[in-house]
Length: 433
Image (cartoon, rainbow, N blue to C red; front, side, top):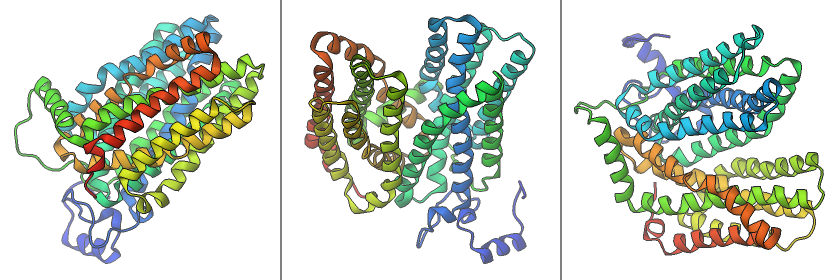
């Protein structure tokens, strides 16, 4: 593989092979007439496989962090602090990270983030092996993980636009959704099993997964950012211009209302489910099994998304699925038993990947390349802004009105989102990709 300009003979050889992943080399444009299937797009495969390894490693380490802190300190509060610090670092870095992604070389950003996270994980491995692991060190690693992840996320989202044709963006996002759900299912059990072997093993696996992702990004041939000749805006102004673009676009403005409501409602429903199951005397192992069953619904939905998207208009996806989800969560409030509730919630989460893939794909398609990072980070930050309040609200509602009241409260939030989507011009007048 060459890193400089490609010779005429090599270009002819590439053209003869007609590899879709390498088409339009050096132009930053997606292949056209007709777009090739994603499974034949080498660059998309490289990015997808690299991230599959990275997310699986992160899922394993995500469980190993609190296990390590508990083993070292015995304090549940300190164990929870690691997760909080990691999320806080990601959240606080979100908006400036998006603006930086839009002015820096995306390939270098992604490679640098994976290298930094791999070094942090290897440093923790060395500390554990040397008997020097401590809470401050673990918190420092968590800050590096969260901050680097805040940069990598929008860079990856923006890169997809230059790898995949606009018409295939929803399908590409759906495949990424399936990857994420699979990592959520397999990561924690893997982390627990590896931690049982030795405390340092899951973190070594995490470091290796980042290296695999780094190599995958390095192997991508296509430019991950269109060429821009204009002078970059100052960082503060760049962040503000990204927010203005989001607010000024009717569809994205609608998402600023819908996404926080739906994300908070889902988080609240899952929290209420755990409380209700424990109140009913369900063993903790069975509670975990119920949660896994619900995630299986999400994985199946992600696998079905590429088939559903071409057959259902985006407006129907948004409006119809929100009403269906509202109905299923409402029904869960009145169904006795643990597993019937799990089935209803698995059905409720089933359409979520299709909905999310359609919305994120549309967001990527309508956002100018030079603003991809800012828009993605702004929407990601605002979409999660209500989620931390969901467990607190759910606990309060369950304490006052019981489990049924908890489910109905979050079903009401979903109903508000469904009404907003039904009335929103930004949703009803979506332009086809």
